Figure (cartoon, rainbow, N blue to C red):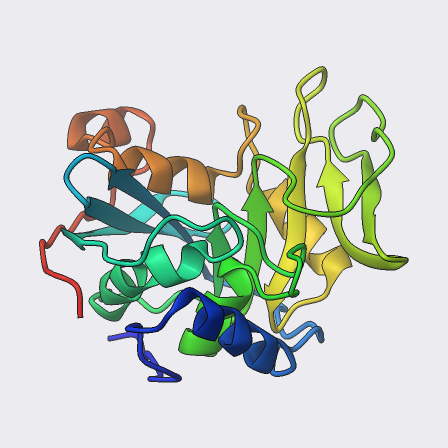
Length: 244
């Protein structure tokens, strides 16, 4: 099982959540600790707003083949309100429950969301990284804060995202002619290596295979037959559980 550290409780107010982010931000490591990862994970969550429930998914992929090794899906209630910049307080408890149930421990985790590119430098990927003490990367589909120049048109081209004069991430072109993704560190990695690993996980799509497949799993669309056809399936596990 993957170790999850109990850094704080989840029954907090919006003001207290922001204060927690400021306190936790100073604990984020911006030093690279990723060298030769064997297993990469992607996490994503699908929230059903009408019912107040959500499904969190974690996929573990072999590197460099990016074959699917394991899938873990956890469903339950979400109680924290939707507040931009505080999504980890709404979604992280279920994600941590999914990670805690893995049979394989990933060396690097990619999050479909922000990391350091956050107003309080404490996005979802940073929060997650601290809870599991594992290198994490934020790879978001949209920009939360900061500005950047338009990156070049070729895959691998990127431009720095800056906020108040500080480089907080990169707008990375992963596919020619397609809008960039927004990469930032989560924990125990630096920005050049975060960009490198996102590029390594991008194949035929805009998004890296880690978070792309996690998104499919969270939506119930990562079927065993399609995974086999794509050459991914090695073993899939699925469990339903409530929030902790």
